[in-house]
Image 1 (cartoon, helix red, strand yellow):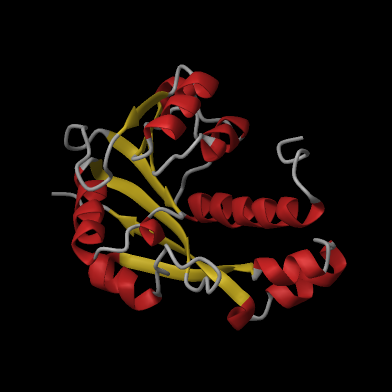
Image 2: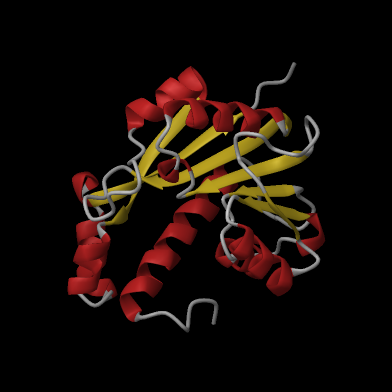
Length: 208
């Protein structure tokens, strides 16, 4: 089981995130990850790459980049043949139009400098092929982590303009943990938009 190593609460958070993500891809006509060239910005130690492989992505088609050399090395060791690089998302070492799908999961919130965020957004779109999809999943509020900067709807519109579609997802993790991740208790609360703490956004790169 993909998230069997997690607590019930954290498993609920990850599974509902994945359900929202996969549903989004399906709405964009992506029913299989197998042949897609995928890039993850801020891949950390590769947790999302592991999930992508579980959902059918071919690791030889997956690239990841993280500014932390140790975490990038850990991901490289764990998820070969995925190509993992240590580097800055605002200066991507990839050619134009290299990927079908780019993912930034809790990546932009770690960029506290506005200029860095803007460059990273530009770079993410540069390396996508025309018609390719950028998916951003990030928190719009996080009062417990002072070294990050929440990514709000207005921030996404500043970065991507009219091309971005935004939805709120993920029941507030503190609530999920208090409720022990019990489906019967969490699901009804997750239907209340203001209790969802994360944004799931998509940008389709326009054809030239």
